[in-house]
Amino acid sequence: MARAALGISVRELAKSSGVAESTILRFETGRGGILATNLDKVQTTLEEGGVIFISADASGGPGVRLRS
Image 1 (cartoon, one colour):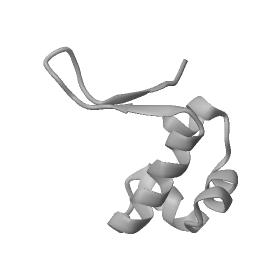
Image 2: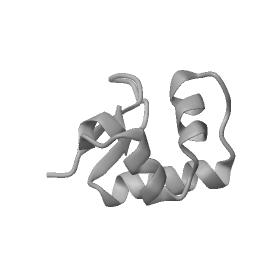
Image 3: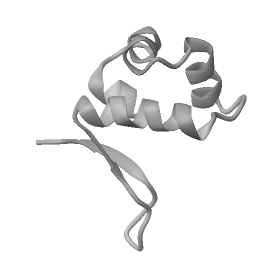
Image 4: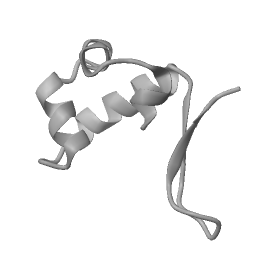
């Protein structure tokens, strides 16, 4: 969802984060896990692009929004 919010492709995210496209695709489709170090790289890249990750709370589940 975060990648889509920024309008970037898997290829662009992979290049920016230094994480393999195949790793990102496996994680996004739920077909495999991701190492914590790679997840940190992806999250940092998305946050630098303007994504804010929202934790689950009493009002709903986790999500993302764009920085205003």
